[in-house]
Length: 298
Length: 296
Picture 1 (cartoon, helix red, strand yellow):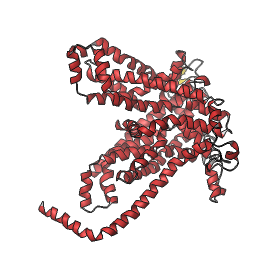
Picture 2: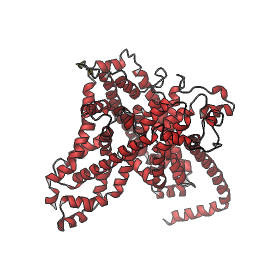
Picture 3: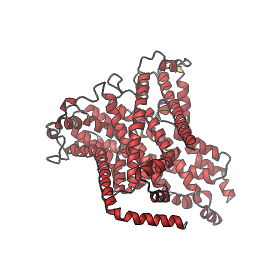
Picture 4: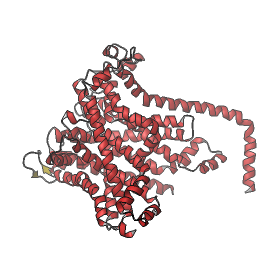
Protein backbone atom coordinates (compact mmCIF):
# COMPACT_ATOMS: atom_id res chain seq x y z
CA UNK A 1 0.00 0.00 0.00
CA UNK A 2 2.73 2.37 1.09
CA UNK A 3 4.64 1.62 -2.05
CA UNK A 4 1.74 2.53 -4.32
CA UNK A 5 1.22 5.76 -2.46
CA UNK A 6 4.89 6.57 -2.76
CA UNK A 7 4.78 5.94 -6.49
CA UNK A 8 1.91 8.24 -7.15
CA UNK A 9 3.51 10.95 -5.07
CA UNK A 10 6.74 10.65 -6.97
CA UNK A 11 4.81 10.76 -10.23
CA UNK A 12 3.16 13.97 -9.13
CA UNK A 13 6.51 15.39 -8.25
CA UNK A 14 7.90 14.48 -11.62
CA UNK A 15 5.03 15.89 -13.55
CA UNK A 16 5.19 19.23 -11.82
CA UNK A 17 7.86 20.87 -14.01
CA UNK A 18 5.92 19.84 -17.09
CA UNK A 19 2.67 21.26 -15.94
CA UNK A 20 2.75 24.49 -17.97
CA UNK A 21 3.53 22.46 -21.03
CA UNK A 22 0.61 20.05 -20.59
CA UNK A 23 -1.67 22.93 -19.76
CA UNK A 24 -0.91 24.51 -23.10
CA UNK A 25 -1.55 21.21 -24.83
CA UNK A 26 -4.80 20.87 -22.93
CA UNK A 27 -5.81 24.30 -24.10
CA UNK A 28 -5.22 23.54 -27.76
CA UNK A 29 -7.16 20.32 -27.36
CA UNK A 30 -9.96 22.12 -25.57
CA UNK A 31 -10.17 24.70 -28.33
CA UNK A 32 -10.35 21.97 -30.97
CA UNK A 33 -13.06 20.12 -29.08
CA UNK A 34 -14.92 23.33 -28.46
CA UNK A 35 -14.79 24.16 -32.18
CA UNK A 36 -16.19 20.75 -33.02
CA UNK A 37 -19.05 21.23 -30.57
CA UNK A 38 -19.70 24.70 -31.95
CA UNK A 39 -19.83 23.39 -35.53
CA UNK A 40 -22.36 20.76 -34.51
CA UNK A 41 -24.35 23.45 -32.70
CA UNK A 42 -24.53 25.45 -35.92
CA UNK A 43 -25.60 22.38 -37.90
CA UNK A 44 -28.30 21.52 -35.37
CA UNK A 45 -29.56 25.06 -34.82
CA UNK A 46 -29.02 27.02 -38.02
CA UNK A 47 -31.87 25.41 -40.00
CA UNK A 48 -34.21 26.30 -37.14
CA UNK A 49 -32.92 29.85 -36.86
CA UNK A 50 -33.27 30.22 -40.61
CA UNK A 51 -36.87 29.05 -40.29
CA UNK A 52 -37.62 31.77 -37.75
CA UNK A 53 -35.85 34.47 -39.79
CA UNK A 54 -37.64 33.64 -43.04
CA UNK A 55 -40.98 33.50 -41.26
CA UNK A 56 -40.64 37.26 -40.67
CA UNK A 57 -39.75 38.13 -44.27
CA UNK A 58 -42.09 39.22 -47.03
CA UNK A 59 -42.11 37.60 -50.48
CA UNK A 60 -39.94 40.33 -51.95
CA UNK A 61 -37.16 39.46 -49.57
CA UNK A 62 -37.57 35.69 -49.75
CA UNK A 63 -37.66 35.47 -53.53
CA UNK A 64 -35.65 38.63 -54.20
CA UNK A 65 -32.29 37.48 -52.99
CA UNK A 66 -32.37 37.97 -49.23
CA UNK A 67 -33.08 34.37 -48.22
CA UNK A 68 -30.01 34.10 -46.04
CA UNK A 69 -29.75 37.32 -44.03
CA UNK A 70 -31.78 38.96 -41.31
CA UNK A 71 -35.13 40.37 -42.41
CA UNK A 72 -34.82 44.05 -43.39
CA UNK A 73 -38.22 44.68 -41.90
CA UNK A 74 -39.52 42.28 -39.27
CA UNK A 75 -43.12 41.90 -40.27
CA UNK A 76 -45.64 39.71 -38.56
CA UNK A 77 -48.08 39.65 -41.46
CA UNK A 78 -47.05 36.05 -42.24
CA UNK A 79 -48.15 35.02 -38.78
CA UNK A 80 -51.46 36.79 -39.14
CA UNK A 81 -52.23 35.23 -42.50
CA UNK A 82 -51.10 31.79 -41.29
CA UNK A 83 -53.43 32.00 -38.29
CA UNK A 84 -56.41 33.36 -40.24
CA UNK A 85 -56.46 32.40 -43.92
CA UNK A 86 -54.09 29.49 -43.34
CA UNK A 87 -56.38 28.11 -40.61
CA UNK A 88 -53.44 27.51 -38.30
CA UNK A 89 -55.42 28.91 -35.35
CA UNK A 90 -57.98 26.18 -35.97
CA UNK A 91 -55.32 23.47 -36.22
CA UNK A 92 -53.69 24.75 -33.07
CA UNK A 93 -56.97 24.51 -31.21
CA UNK A 94 -57.53 20.98 -32.54
CA UNK A 95 -54.06 19.94 -31.45
CA UNK A 96 -54.62 21.40 -27.99
CA UNK A 97 -57.93 19.56 -27.65
CA UNK A 98 -56.59 16.22 -28.88
CA UNK A 99 -53.29 16.35 -27.01
CA UNK A 100 -54.88 17.77 -23.85
CA UNK A 101 -57.56 15.08 -23.72
CA UNK A 102 -55.01 12.40 -24.48
CA UNK A 103 -52.78 13.51 -21.61
CA UNK A 104 -55.64 13.76 -19.11
CA UNK A 105 -57.31 10.46 -19.99
CA UNK A 106 -54.06 8.51 -20.31
CA UNK A 107 -52.72 9.87 -17.01
CA UNK A 108 -55.86 8.72 -15.17
CA UNK A 109 -55.86 5.28 -16.79
CA UNK A 110 -52.14 4.80 -16.27
CA UNK A 111 -52.31 5.80 -12.60
CA UNK A 112 -55.32 3.62 -11.75
CA UNK A 113 -54.21 0.52 -13.62
CA UNK A 114 -50.61 0.79 -12.39
CA UNK A 115 -51.91 1.06 -8.83
CA UNK A 116 -54.12 -1.98 -9.21
CA UNK A 117 -51.30 -3.94 -10.84
CA UNK A 118 -48.61 -3.22 -8.25
CA UNK A 119 -50.59 -2.93 -5.02
CA UNK A 120 -53.85 -4.82 -5.25
CA UNK A 121 -54.18 -8.56 -4.87
CA UNK A 122 -55.60 -10.46 -7.84
CA UNK A 123 -54.66 -13.44 -9.90
CA UNK A 124 -53.86 -11.87 -13.24
CA UNK A 125 -51.93 -8.79 -12.15
CA UNK A 126 -48.59 -10.09 -13.49
CA UNK A 127 -50.11 -11.25 -16.76
CA UNK A 128 -51.87 -7.91 -17.25
CA UNK A 129 -48.61 -6.07 -16.74
CA UNK A 130 -46.82 -8.28 -19.26
CA UNK A 131 -49.55 -7.73 -21.86
CA UNK A 132 -49.33 -3.96 -21.44
CA UNK A 133 -45.55 -3.98 -21.61
CA UNK A 134 -45.54 -6.07 -24.78
CA UNK A 135 -47.42 -3.16 -26.32
CA UNK A 136 -44.18 -1.18 -26.30
CA UNK A 137 -42.95 -3.40 -29.12
CA UNK A 138 -45.93 -2.75 -31.39
CA UNK A 139 -45.23 -0.38 -34.28
CA UNK A 140 -48.18 1.83 -35.15
CA UNK A 141 -47.96 0.73 -38.80
CA UNK A 142 -49.33 -2.68 -38.02
CA UNK A 143 -52.45 -1.26 -36.46
CA UNK A 144 -53.17 1.48 -38.99
CA UNK A 145 -55.54 -0.26 -41.38
CA UNK A 146 -57.46 -2.37 -38.81
CA UNK A 147 -57.87 0.71 -36.61
CA UNK A 148 -59.12 2.68 -39.59
CA UNK A 149 -61.74 0.00 -40.23
CA UNK A 150 -62.69 -0.31 -36.55
CA UNK A 151 -63.10 3.45 -36.23
CA UNK A 152 -65.14 3.51 -39.43
CA UNK A 153 -67.42 0.79 -38.03
CA UNK A 154 -67.84 2.81 -34.85
CA UNK A 155 -68.66 5.88 -37.01
CA UNK A 156 -66.11 8.03 -35.25
CA UNK A 157 -63.76 8.76 -38.15
CA UNK A 158 -63.36 12.53 -38.49
CA UNK A 159 -63.93 13.24 -34.83
CA UNK A 160 -61.48 14.10 -32.10
CA UNK A 161 -62.25 10.73 -30.52
CA UNK A 162 -60.79 8.95 -33.56
CA UNK A 163 -57.39 10.28 -32.55
CA UNK A 164 -57.73 10.44 -28.79
CA UNK A 165 -58.62 6.74 -28.43
CA UNK A 166 -55.57 5.35 -30.24
CA UNK A 167 -53.25 8.00 -28.77
CA UNK A 168 -54.33 7.04 -25.25
CA UNK A 169 -54.01 3.33 -26.06
CA UNK A 170 -50.48 3.78 -27.36
CA UNK A 171 -49.51 5.92 -24.37
CA UNK A 172 -50.48 3.16 -21.94
CA UNK A 173 -47.55 0.72 -22.28
CA UNK A 174 -44.81 3.28 -21.70
CA UNK A 175 -46.78 5.03 -18.99
CA UNK A 176 -47.58 1.84 -17.11
CA UNK A 177 -43.96 0.81 -17.43
CA UNK A 178 -42.77 4.05 -15.82
CA UNK A 179 -45.55 4.22 -13.24
CA UNK A 180 -45.38 0.62 -11.98
CA UNK A 181 -41.63 0.82 -11.43
CA UNK A 182 -42.13 4.14 -9.64
CA UNK A 183 -44.85 2.67 -7.43
CA UNK A 184 -42.61 -0.24 -6.45
CA UNK A 185 -40.26 2.30 -4.92
CA UNK A 186 -42.89 4.01 -2.74
CA UNK A 187 -43.22 2.63 0.80
CA UNK A 188 -46.66 1.32 1.70
CA UNK A 189 -46.82 2.77 5.25
CA UNK A 190 -48.85 5.81 4.28
CA UNK A 191 -51.51 3.72 2.61
CA UNK A 192 -51.64 1.36 5.57
CA UNK A 193 -52.04 4.26 7.96
CA UNK A 194 -54.87 5.63 5.84
CA UNK A 195 -56.48 2.21 5.93
CA UNK A 196 -56.29 2.14 9.71
CA UNK A 197 -57.94 5.56 9.70
CA UNK A 198 -60.84 3.98 7.84
CA UNK A 199 -60.30 5.21 4.30
CA UNK A 200 -61.72 3.02 1.56
CA UNK A 201 -59.71 2.02 -1.49
CA UNK A 202 -60.84 4.98 -3.62
CA UNK A 203 -59.97 7.47 -0.90
CA UNK A 204 -56.57 5.87 -0.42
CA UNK A 205 -55.91 6.09 -4.13
CA UNK A 206 -57.17 9.61 -4.60
CA UNK A 207 -55.93 11.26 -1.40
CA UNK A 208 -52.75 9.35 -0.62
CA UNK A 209 -51.35 7.67 -3.74
CA UNK A 210 -52.18 10.13 -6.49
CA UNK A 211 -50.29 13.06 -4.92
CA UNK A 212 -47.25 10.83 -4.50
CA UNK A 213 -47.34 9.90 -8.17
CA UNK A 214 -46.96 13.47 -9.40
CA UNK A 215 -43.29 13.34 -10.46
CA UNK A 216 -43.71 10.23 -12.56
CA UNK A 217 -47.01 11.50 -13.94
CA UNK A 218 -45.06 14.51 -15.19
CA UNK A 219 -42.54 12.25 -16.92
CA UNK A 220 -45.34 10.31 -18.56
CA UNK A 221 -47.25 13.45 -19.53
CA UNK A 222 -44.27 14.98 -21.30
CA UNK A 223 -43.72 11.81 -23.25
CA UNK A 224 -47.39 11.61 -24.17
CA UNK A 225 -47.47 15.29 -25.10
CA UNK A 226 -44.60 15.00 -27.57
CA UNK A 227 -45.81 11.82 -29.21
CA UNK A 228 -49.38 13.03 -29.72
CA UNK A 229 -48.53 16.65 -30.57
CA UNK A 230 -46.20 15.51 -33.36
CA UNK A 231 -48.03 12.42 -34.59
CA UNK A 232 -48.68 12.28 -38.32
CA UNK A 233 -49.68 8.83 -39.58
CA UNK A 234 -52.87 8.33 -37.55
CA UNK A 235 -53.90 11.97 -37.81
CA UNK A 236 -53.45 11.91 -41.56
CA UNK A 237 -55.52 8.75 -41.95
CA UNK A 238 -58.34 9.14 -39.44
CA UNK A 239 -59.18 12.78 -40.14
CA UNK A 240 -60.12 13.83 -43.66
CA UNK A 241 -62.14 16.82 -42.56
CA UNK A 242 -59.87 19.87 -42.26
CA UNK A 243 -62.16 21.07 -39.47
CA UNK A 244 -60.61 18.50 -37.15
CA UNK A 245 -57.07 18.44 -38.54
CA UNK A 246 -54.27 18.66 -36.00
CA UNK A 247 -51.20 20.81 -36.66
CA UNK A 248 -49.06 18.22 -38.48
CA UNK A 249 -51.85 17.35 -40.93
CA UNK A 250 -53.16 20.89 -41.24
CA UNK A 251 -49.77 22.33 -41.99
CA UNK A 252 -49.10 19.66 -44.58
CA UNK A 253 -52.30 20.48 -46.41
CA UNK A 254 -51.66 24.22 -46.14
CA UNK A 255 -48.18 23.74 -47.58
CA UNK A 256 -49.61 21.60 -50.35
CA UNK A 257 -52.24 24.12 -51.37
CA UNK A 258 -50.15 27.27 -51.16
CA UNK A 259 -46.74 25.92 -52.02
CA UNK A 260 -45.38 29.30 -53.05
CA UNK A 261 -46.48 31.14 -49.92
CA UNK A 262 -43.29 30.52 -48.01
CA UNK A 263 -43.85 33.20 -45.40
CA UNK A 264 -47.16 31.95 -43.99
CA UNK A 265 -46.09 28.29 -44.24
CA UNK A 266 -42.91 28.90 -42.29
CA UNK A 267 -44.81 31.05 -39.80
CA UNK A 268 -47.18 28.11 -39.36
CA UNK A 269 -44.23 25.82 -38.69
CA UNK A 270 -42.97 28.21 -36.03
CA UNK A 271 -46.40 28.35 -34.39
CA UNK A 272 -46.62 24.55 -34.38
CA UNK A 273 -43.22 24.29 -32.72
CA UNK A 274 -43.55 27.11 -30.22
CA UNK A 275 -45.50 25.19 -27.53
CA UNK A 276 -42.88 22.43 -27.49
CA UNK A 277 -40.04 24.95 -27.24
CA UNK A 278 -41.83 26.85 -24.48
CA UNK A 279 -42.18 23.57 -22.62
CA UNK A 280 -38.59 22.60 -23.34
CA UNK A 281 -36.72 25.71 -22.26
CA UNK A 282 -37.60 25.65 -18.54
CA UNK A 283 -37.95 21.87 -18.36
CA UNK A 284 -35.14 20.70 -20.62
CA UNK A 285 -33.74 18.23 -18.08
CA UNK A 286 -37.15 16.85 -17.33
CA UNK A 287 -37.97 16.52 -21.03
CA UNK A 288 -34.68 14.81 -21.76
CA UNK A 289 -35.22 12.38 -18.90
CA UNK A 290 -38.75 11.68 -20.02
CA UNK A 291 -37.70 10.82 -23.56
CA UNK A 292 -34.88 8.64 -22.29
CA UNK A 293 -37.19 6.42 -20.26
CA UNK A 294 -38.23 4.90 -23.56
CA UNK A 295 -34.77 3.45 -23.93
CA UNK A 296 -34.48 1.93 -20.48
CA UNK A 297 -36.81 -0.86 -21.41
CA UNK A 298 -34.30 -2.15 -23.98
CA UNK B 1 -55.44 -3.68 4.52
CA UNK B 2 -55.55 -6.99 2.64
CA UNK B 3 -59.30 -6.88 2.62
CA UNK B 4 -59.24 -3.48 1.00
CA UNK B 5 -56.65 -4.60 -1.58
CA UNK B 6 -58.80 -7.59 -2.43
CA UNK B 7 -61.70 -5.41 -3.50
CA UNK B 8 -62.54 -6.99 -6.85
CA UNK B 9 -64.90 -4.23 -7.86
CA UNK B 10 -62.20 -1.60 -7.35
CA UNK B 11 -59.69 -3.67 -9.31
CA UNK B 12 -62.18 -3.91 -12.15
CA UNK B 13 -62.82 -0.16 -12.12
CA UNK B 14 -59.11 0.59 -12.02
CA UNK B 15 -57.94 -1.78 -14.74
CA UNK B 16 -60.81 -2.56 -17.06
CA UNK B 17 -61.08 0.74 -18.98
CA UNK B 18 -57.38 0.76 -19.79
CA UNK B 19 -57.39 -2.92 -20.73
CA UNK B 20 -60.46 -2.58 -22.93
CA UNK B 21 -59.02 0.34 -24.83
CA UNK B 22 -55.66 -1.37 -25.15
CA UNK B 23 -57.21 -4.54 -26.53
CA UNK B 24 -59.37 -2.67 -29.05
CA UNK B 25 -56.73 -0.27 -30.29
CA UNK B 26 -53.53 -2.30 -30.05
CA UNK B 27 -53.97 -6.05 -29.57
CA UNK B 28 -56.95 -6.66 -31.81
CA UNK B 29 -55.57 -4.65 -34.77
CA UNK B 30 -52.34 -6.67 -34.82
CA UNK B 31 -54.33 -9.90 -35.04
CA UNK B 32 -56.67 -8.46 -37.66
CA UNK B 33 -53.77 -7.10 -39.68
CA UNK B 34 -52.10 -10.50 -39.82
CA UNK B 35 -55.39 -12.01 -40.91
CA UNK B 36 -55.87 -9.39 -43.67
CA UNK B 37 -52.45 -10.20 -45.05
CA UNK B 38 -53.80 -13.55 -46.25
CA UNK B 39 -56.72 -11.97 -48.10
CA UNK B 40 -57.34 -10.45 -51.48
CA UNK B 41 -59.56 -7.54 -50.57
CA UNK B 42 -60.24 -4.02 -51.80
CA UNK B 43 -61.98 -2.96 -48.59
CA UNK B 44 -65.46 -2.78 -50.11
CA UNK B 45 -66.22 -5.96 -52.04
CA UNK B 46 -65.95 -9.53 -50.89
CA UNK B 47 -62.63 -10.69 -49.52
CA UNK B 48 -61.18 -13.95 -50.72
CA UNK B 49 -58.59 -16.03 -48.90
CA UNK B 50 -55.41 -16.35 -50.95
CA UNK B 51 -52.97 -17.94 -48.50
CA UNK B 52 -49.41 -16.66 -48.76
CA UNK B 53 -49.89 -15.23 -52.25
CA UNK B 54 -49.49 -11.66 -50.98
CA UNK B 55 -46.18 -12.52 -49.39
CA UNK B 56 -45.05 -14.19 -52.63
CA UNK B 57 -45.91 -11.03 -54.54
CA UNK B 58 -43.68 -9.03 -52.22
CA UNK B 59 -40.56 -10.86 -53.31
CA UNK B 60 -41.14 -13.10 -56.34
CA UNK B 61 -41.37 -11.17 -59.62
CA UNK B 62 -42.16 -8.06 -57.61
CA UNK B 63 -43.22 -5.17 -59.84
CA UNK B 64 -44.29 -2.39 -57.47
CA UNK B 65 -40.82 -1.69 -56.12
CA UNK B 66 -41.18 -3.34 -52.72
CA UNK B 67 -37.78 -4.99 -52.93
CA UNK B 68 -36.22 -1.66 -53.82
CA UNK B 69 -37.98 -0.02 -50.86
CA UNK B 70 -36.57 -2.65 -48.50
CA UNK B 71 -33.12 -2.00 -49.94
CA UNK B 72 -33.59 1.71 -49.33
CA UNK B 73 -34.53 1.14 -45.70
CA UNK B 74 -31.39 -0.99 -45.32
CA UNK B 75 -29.30 1.84 -46.73
CA UNK B 76 -30.85 4.16 -44.16
CA UNK B 77 -30.17 1.66 -41.39
CA UNK B 78 -26.53 1.33 -42.43
CA UNK B 79 -26.09 5.09 -42.69
CA UNK B 80 -27.62 5.52 -39.24
CA UNK B 81 -25.28 2.98 -37.72
CA UNK B 82 -22.09 4.20 -39.41
CA UNK B 83 -22.72 7.97 -39.35
CA UNK B 84 -25.34 8.85 -36.75
CA UNK B 85 -24.21 6.58 -33.91
CA UNK B 86 -20.46 7.26 -34.10
CA UNK B 87 -21.14 10.99 -34.28
CA UNK B 88 -23.43 10.73 -31.26
CA UNK B 89 -20.83 8.71 -29.39
CA UNK B 90 -18.06 11.23 -30.08
CA UNK B 91 -20.26 14.10 -28.92
CA UNK B 92 -21.33 12.17 -25.82
CA UNK B 93 -17.72 11.35 -24.91
CA UNK B 94 -16.65 14.96 -25.31
CA UNK B 95 -19.58 16.37 -23.36
CA UNK B 96 -19.46 13.83 -20.57
CA UNK B 97 -15.86 14.60 -19.68
CA UNK B 98 -17.06 17.95 -18.44
CA UNK B 99 -16.36 20.67 -20.97
CA UNK B 100 -17.43 24.26 -20.47
CA UNK B 101 -21.02 24.73 -21.58
CA UNK B 102 -21.81 21.03 -21.22
CA UNK B 103 -25.44 21.65 -20.32
CA UNK B 104 -25.93 24.19 -23.11
CA UNK B 105 -24.62 21.91 -25.84
CA UNK B 106 -26.64 18.98 -24.54
CA UNK B 107 -29.81 21.06 -24.50
CA UNK B 108 -29.21 22.43 -27.99
CA UNK B 109 -28.38 19.09 -29.62
CA UNK B 110 -31.60 17.69 -28.28
CA UNK B 111 -33.89 20.40 -29.68
CA UNK B 112 -34.52 18.74 -33.09
CA UNK B 113 -35.78 15.62 -31.28
CA UNK B 114 -38.77 17.43 -29.78
CA UNK B 115 -39.81 19.07 -33.05
CA UNK B 116 -42.52 17.53 -35.19
CA UNK B 117 -41.31 15.59 -38.21
CA UNK B 118 -43.78 17.52 -40.33
CA UNK B 119 -42.14 20.80 -39.31
CA UNK B 120 -38.71 19.38 -40.05
CA UNK B 121 -39.90 17.92 -43.35
CA UNK B 122 -41.45 21.19 -44.51
CA UNK B 123 -38.37 23.10 -43.38
CA UNK B 124 -36.04 20.84 -45.35
CA UNK B 125 -38.32 21.11 -48.37
CA UNK B 126 -37.62 24.82 -48.31
CA UNK B 127 -33.93 24.22 -47.69
CA UNK B 128 -33.77 21.91 -50.74
CA UNK B 129 -35.81 24.22 -52.96
CA UNK B 130 -33.98 24.47 -56.30
CA UNK B 131 -34.47 28.22 -56.80
CA UNK B 132 -34.66 29.87 -53.41
CA UNK B 133 -33.55 27.10 -51.04
CA UNK B 134 -30.87 27.60 -48.42
CA UNK B 135 -28.68 24.80 -49.72
CA UNK B 136 -28.40 25.94 -53.34
CA UNK B 137 -27.91 29.56 -52.32
CA UNK B 138 -25.08 28.64 -50.00
CA UNK B 139 -23.53 26.52 -52.76
CA UNK B 140 -23.76 29.44 -55.20
CA UNK B 141 -22.30 31.83 -52.64
CA UNK B 142 -19.23 29.70 -52.05
CA UNK B 143 -18.68 29.18 -55.76
CA UNK B 144 -20.03 25.66 -56.03
CA UNK B 145 -23.08 26.75 -57.98
CA UNK B 146 -22.59 24.01 -60.55
CA UNK B 147 -23.59 21.46 -57.92
CA UNK B 148 -26.84 23.21 -57.12
CA UNK B 149 -29.89 21.33 -58.31
CA UNK B 150 -33.37 20.05 -57.51
CA UNK B 151 -32.33 17.69 -54.75
CA UNK B 152 -35.72 16.10 -54.12
CA UNK B 153 -36.84 15.91 -57.76
CA UNK B 154 -33.74 14.12 -59.02
CA UNK B 155 -33.89 10.33 -58.74
CA UNK B 156 -30.16 10.28 -58.04
CA UNK B 157 -30.24 12.55 -55.01
CA UNK B 158 -33.77 12.16 -53.62
CA UNK B 159 -32.91 9.19 -51.43
CA UNK B 160 -30.00 10.79 -49.64
CA UNK B 161 -31.71 14.16 -49.47
CA UNK B 162 -34.55 12.56 -47.48
CA UNK B 163 -32.16 10.59 -45.28
CA UNK B 164 -30.16 13.63 -44.17
CA UNK B 165 -32.92 15.22 -42.04
CA UNK B 166 -33.75 11.82 -40.51
CA UNK B 167 -30.17 11.39 -39.38
CA UNK B 168 -29.91 15.06 -38.40
CA UNK B 169 -32.98 14.92 -36.20
CA UNK B 170 -31.99 12.01 -34.00
CA UNK B 171 -28.25 12.52 -33.47
CA UNK B 172 -29.13 14.39 -30.27
CA UNK B 173 -31.30 11.58 -28.99
CA UNK B 174 -28.60 8.94 -29.30
CA UNK B 175 -26.06 11.41 -27.94
CA UNK B 176 -28.18 11.92 -24.83
CA UNK B 177 -28.66 8.20 -24.19
CA UNK B 178 -24.93 7.59 -24.48
CA UNK B 179 -24.13 10.69 -22.45
CA UNK B 180 -26.33 9.55 -19.57
CA UNK B 181 -24.72 6.12 -19.64
CA UNK B 182 -21.21 7.59 -19.60
CA UNK B 183 -22.14 9.88 -16.71
CA UNK B 184 -23.24 6.90 -14.67
CA UNK B 185 -19.81 5.27 -14.93
CA UNK B 186 -18.13 5.64 -11.56
CA UNK B 187 -15.51 8.42 -11.36
CA UNK B 188 -13.19 6.17 -9.39
CA UNK B 189 -12.49 3.99 -12.41
CA UNK B 190 -11.22 7.01 -14.30
CA UNK B 191 -9.19 8.21 -11.33
CA UNK B 192 -7.42 4.88 -11.24
CA UNK B 193 -6.75 5.01 -14.96
CA UNK B 194 -5.51 8.58 -14.73
CA UNK B 195 -3.04 7.59 -12.05
CA UNK B 196 -1.78 4.92 -14.39
CA UNK B 197 -1.23 7.66 -16.95
CA UNK B 198 -3.92 6.61 -19.43
CA UNK B 199 -4.70 9.17 -22.13
CA UNK B 200 -8.21 10.36 -22.78
CA UNK B 201 -8.42 8.26 -25.92
CA UNK B 202 -7.32 5.08 -24.18
CA UNK B 203 -9.78 5.74 -21.38
CA UNK B 204 -12.60 6.23 -23.86
CA UNK B 205 -11.85 3.14 -25.92
CA UNK B 206 -10.70 0.83 -23.11
CA UNK B 207 -12.98 1.85 -20.26
CA UNK B 208 -15.97 3.95 -21.30
CA UNK B 209 -17.08 2.22 -24.48
CA UNK B 210 -16.93 -1.33 -23.07
CA UNK B 211 -18.80 -0.16 -19.97
CA UNK B 212 -21.64 1.48 -21.90
CA UNK B 213 -22.14 -1.44 -24.26
CA UNK B 214 -25.73 -2.05 -23.08
CA UNK B 215 -26.77 1.44 -24.17
CA UNK B 216 -24.84 1.12 -27.45
CA UNK B 217 -26.88 -1.97 -28.08
CA UNK B 218 -30.11 -0.10 -27.36
CA UNK B 219 -29.05 2.73 -29.67
CA UNK B 220 -28.18 0.29 -32.45
CA UNK B 221 -31.57 -1.39 -32.12
CA UNK B 222 -33.33 1.99 -32.15
CA UNK B 223 -31.38 3.20 -35.18
CA UNK B 224 -31.98 0.04 -37.21
CA UNK B 225 -35.61 -0.50 -36.24
CA UNK B 226 -36.31 3.21 -36.62
CA UNK B 227 -34.94 3.04 -40.18
CA UNK B 228 -37.09 0.05 -41.07
CA UNK B 229 -40.19 1.84 -39.76
CA UNK B 230 -39.34 5.34 -40.99
CA UNK B 231 -42.32 7.04 -42.54
CA UNK B 232 -42.98 10.66 -41.55
CA UNK B 233 -40.10 12.56 -43.08
CA UNK B 234 -40.12 10.59 -46.31
CA UNK B 235 -43.88 10.95 -46.61
CA UNK B 236 -43.61 14.72 -46.16
CA UNK B 237 -40.58 15.30 -48.36
CA UNK B 238 -41.08 13.04 -51.39
CA UNK B 239 -43.80 10.52 -50.56
CA UNK B 240 -41.40 7.91 -51.91
CA UNK B 241 -40.88 9.62 -55.25
CA UNK B 242 -39.68 10.52 -57.80
CA UNK B 243 -40.32 7.18 -59.50
CA UNK B 244 -39.97 5.26 -56.20
CA UNK B 245 -36.41 6.56 -55.82
CA UNK B 246 -36.86 7.28 -52.11
CA UNK B 247 -39.53 4.69 -51.39
CA UNK B 248 -39.35 2.82 -48.08
CA UNK B 249 -41.62 -0.07 -47.05
CA UNK B 250 -43.97 2.01 -44.91
CA UNK B 251 -44.59 4.72 -47.53
CA UNK B 252 -45.27 2.00 -50.10
CA UNK B 253 -47.58 0.27 -47.62
CA UNK B 254 -49.46 3.51 -47.08
CA UNK B 255 -50.05 4.17 -50.77
CA UNK B 256 -50.87 0.51 -51.45
CA UNK B 257 -53.62 0.60 -48.82
CA UNK B 258 -55.01 4.10 -49.11
CA UNK B 259 -54.44 4.93 -52.79
CA UNK B 260 -54.64 1.53 -54.47
CA UNK B 261 -57.08 -0.01 -51.96
CA UNK B 262 -55.15 -3.28 -51.87
CA UNK B 263 -55.91 -4.01 -48.23
CA UNK B 264 -54.61 -7.58 -48.15
CA UNK B 265 -51.39 -6.87 -49.99
CA UNK B 266 -50.72 -3.73 -47.95
CA UNK B 267 -51.26 -5.67 -44.73
CA UNK B 268 -48.70 -8.21 -45.89
CA UNK B 269 -46.25 -5.32 -46.16
CA UNK B 270 -47.01 -4.13 -42.65
CA UNK B 271 -46.67 -7.65 -41.28
CA UNK B 272 -43.36 -7.95 -43.08
CA UNK B 273 -42.13 -4.74 -41.41
CA UNK B 274 -42.99 -6.05 -37.93
CA UNK B 275 -41.35 -9.42 -38.49
CA UNK B 276 -38.31 -7.71 -40.00
CA UNK B 277 -38.02 -5.49 -36.90
CA UNK B 278 -38.31 -8.43 -34.51
CA UNK B 279 -35.76 -10.49 -36.42
CA UNK B 280 -33.24 -7.68 -36.53
CA UNK B 281 -33.71 -6.87 -32.85
CA UNK B 282 -32.81 -10.48 -32.07
CA UNK B 283 -29.86 -10.42 -34.48
CA UNK B 284 -28.45 -7.26 -32.91
CA UNK B 285 -28.82 -8.68 -29.40
CA UNK B 286 -27.07 -11.81 -30.57
CA UNK B 287 -24.21 -9.86 -32.15
CA UNK B 288 -23.63 -7.87 -28.98
CA UNK B 289 -23.77 -11.01 -26.87
CA UNK B 290 -21.20 -12.79 -29.02
CA UNK B 291 -18.87 -9.83 -28.73
CA UNK B 292 -19.27 -9.92 -24.98
CA UNK B 293 -18.55 -13.64 -24.90
CA UNK B 294 -15.40 -13.19 -26.98
CA UNK B 295 -14.08 -10.51 -24.68
CA UNK B 296 -14.68 -12.66 -21.63
